[in-house]
Length: 69
Image (cartoon, rainbow, N blue to C red):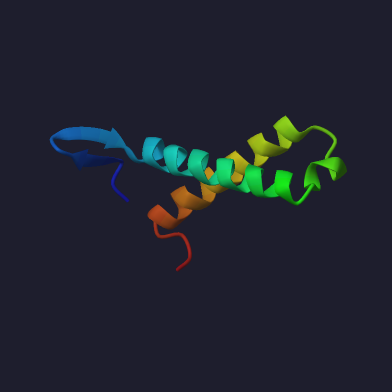
């Protein structure tokens, strides 16, 4: 795994790209959970969204670093 990606001459940390992708995925999952009325089962939905974000970031970093070998 490289620690940085070269995008048009600018070095961008890999975790920043993973976090941006995780933010988009978390937004989509959150909207899906609202549509499914799932948040009535969750005590604190903001904390639940944060947990989903952290899990997605770590899975993305694991996939980028070649984790499932």
